[in-house]
Image: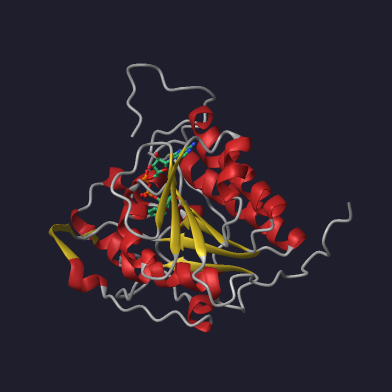
Length: 291
Ligand SMILES: NC(=O)c1ccc[n+]([C@@H]2O[C@H](COP(=O)([O-])OP(=O)(O)OC[C@H]3O[C@@H](n4cnc5c(N)ncnc54)[C@H](O)[C@@H]3O)[C@@H](O)[C@H]2O)c1
């Protein structure tokens, strides 16, 4: 079989009907927050390995493990786009327990997207691909990779895998490096890279629909004071954040000066950057907790 021309970007096949969007990790924090915004626009296939209750009109639930390639291919079949949120995370996360969710699952999805002819892929990445950069003098949009901990490494890997598939097979791909997606802004670090779910949903829609998306990196941040990212590419693609971080401060908001050192106040990645890299292979010893 002849592989498609590299960079021969595929046409969207949805036409005028509502697109079908597969959301992985849909039971998680971000998936739950995005769901009301996304279902206004798309029919949703909500996937997770844990149960999701209460499907609304236009929502279908799919349950299983993304580490199972045959399962992933069946779930991807027939959708118009994939939003890949599923992940395991935590400051103390070791490499072995991250392999299925943060490496294998991404490869299974990308390969299913290729073989099933899905034209669009939106990858939920993170500012933790820059986590080990010092905050002072940070280059923002132009910063090089500096992943913090096993989590940041998995996100950087996911970005590169998505880029390889986008360039080789013409899958229109948007990598969204999310800042902080908590419902409220907890500290000064988050204040500079916080996003509302509504603004994040706007970026997802750009990834699913914008004809100029080929293989692009944007930042999942709302309007923030002294932002860590200028988000130039997102603005060129039409992104206009509607929410302001300052309007969503947590009642227990912590200023930089009051942040303890273990929270990594001088690094882009915060507490993920303030620890020794927990790379030793294998599950943590039983007495250690996984965040
Ligand atoms: N929450 C934030 O502030 C934030 C910041 C930056 C980036 N992100 C990114 O956004 C995405 C969503 O984050 P979140 O906070 O909702 O995470 P979460 O931990 O709340 O949710 C992740 C979901 O993935 C599912 N999952 C994990 N492994 C799976 C597997 N093998 N098969 C099927 N499902 C699996 C889990 O069951 C869980 O429901 C992630 O990719 C994360 O890296 C989030």
